Amino acid sequence: MLCGIITNSNQKVIARHVTKEQGPYHCAGCGHELIVKKGNIKVHHFAHKPPYNCSRGDGESEAHRKCKETIYFELMKQGNVTDLDIEKDFGTVVADIYCKIDGVPVAIEVQRSNLSVDQITRRTSEYFKLGVNVLWLALFDQKLNDGKYSPTAWMKWCHAAYFGRVFYWTEGLSVLPVHYGAYAIDVESTSWFDSDGNENSGGGYSKISKRYKTPSFGSKHNLVQDLKPAYKQPWSGGSVSIPECRLFVSKHKKWW
Ligand SMILES: [Zn+2]
Image: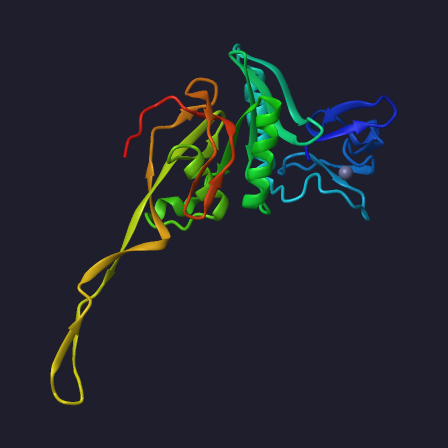
């Protein structure tokens, strides 16, 4: 996590802005002592002093923290952004980043390693109850450039929720919308002779892969310019189920 509480003053601070000497620090969730991790290369952050029993900060990779910190500091410079907060605690859910963009309340949630479909569904429902539009972001994955991509279950969920797009963070306030198209697998034609000497043949056709998709890139979106709030009714299709929700979606037409 990027934020901790200075125990003596009860002030919420971001790891980047403080020194070890300003501590001790504790967790805003469980109250347990935190250690501030400040290195030259890695994103400064807080970690629970072991042993601990708290899920805050779970599944946050270096890439997750970099994305969260970068977006937070970039949003700070934007004229149409107000009420900006990082790791904002709503009681039922903690938003990686929260702000109002042109007066519209938005929670930005960044991919974590342990994110399940159940969690993304539950958290999206909580934001709906709070009247907050949610934007789930994936971290850019070089494998998208291979032309053959195997999305995770939560990415497929996002694809269905965000009208056929998953937003991958690239840098600054830029996100790349990616559509998952069908991926065809060629089944080569072969022929063989059976035990009676008759020639048989098979294959020579293609089938749609269930596992792989063909990624199709849209044009990069700026978080504070190219998205808008949208209400979505509950929806189910295949193995995906989207609850009634408010999302922050693309303003632009589909390109595929
Ligand atoms: Zn904690």
